[in-house]
Image (cartoon, rainbow, N blue to C red; front, side, top):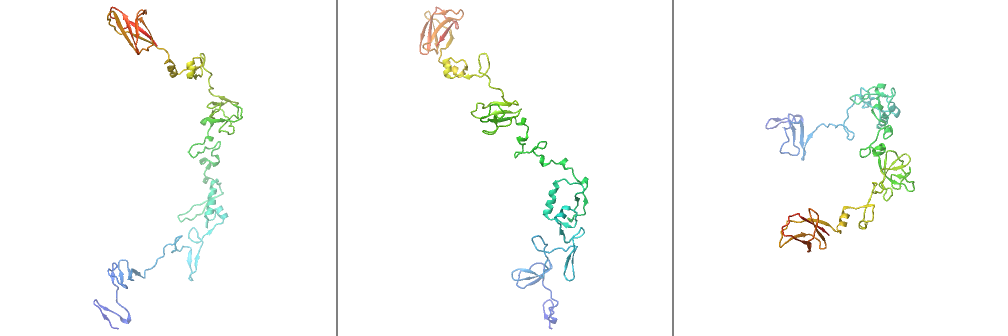
Length: 380
């Protein structure tokens, strides 16, 4: 076979074989790609070919992904799994020293808890766990440990020292909200009033029971039209029934009857303290009722229609032609005016002239009169 000469050397085609030929070595994909172009990538060690669309690896080995519960893939053959020459696979039972097949325990075996080479189902496990709320007794159960591979090691019989004293740590559910037990909490994080002693909530709004004997044991109810409550000593009952003769009155239970607390006092008199009503305007004007009281407003209104007494002393007066003139303002036209000496009280006769809202007093005197010598009493 002849040899074809090339630039760098001879291409040997002896025996119709391509000998001594090396595919182009490149560290990266060439820039000018042509369909069918082959090269060896010195970076990753794979042979590539360009198929006209993309560069693909020629003959890359396929590695199975790891198998999962939702994806097919490769699995690892355990120590207890063997493959015969004819391709038969044998799997031994799982043990504490090797992996393999495992059998599901029966309900009885799961309940006993002594087997170390069986598996339990979630249902059997839930059943077993639910029994933990019942205190165990020594010798009834087996305690086991689990190694780092999740395997159950050999168990030992439960002893009395392995059993915690639940009664010293936990409170039984049956004692919740019960006498000699523990109080519960409502949706607001508070103890319900039904679980509190009466003195904590000892003021209760009540209603009278229709037809019941007043103040008897069956006289009051917690609701309008409801059944009678059971009265208790030490509790204050307030009647809130609108329109009732007992409305807003408070009572206590004596043991045999309801007793009003701070009963309403009697009618006030001139000699006895008590309650009194306010007089009406008609009673005020009539002046005959002796069992009602008068408010300041009614008294002022009544007095405004009565004659008023006003005392005024004279200012310093200068005589003119043997007469001293004294003027008084704010005097009703029909007022009665009298003049008296301040020192001795003797009445002085003067000329009094009424004007519009004022009065003029003329006194005979040949000398001036000092201030405060006389007083004028105005009635009207």
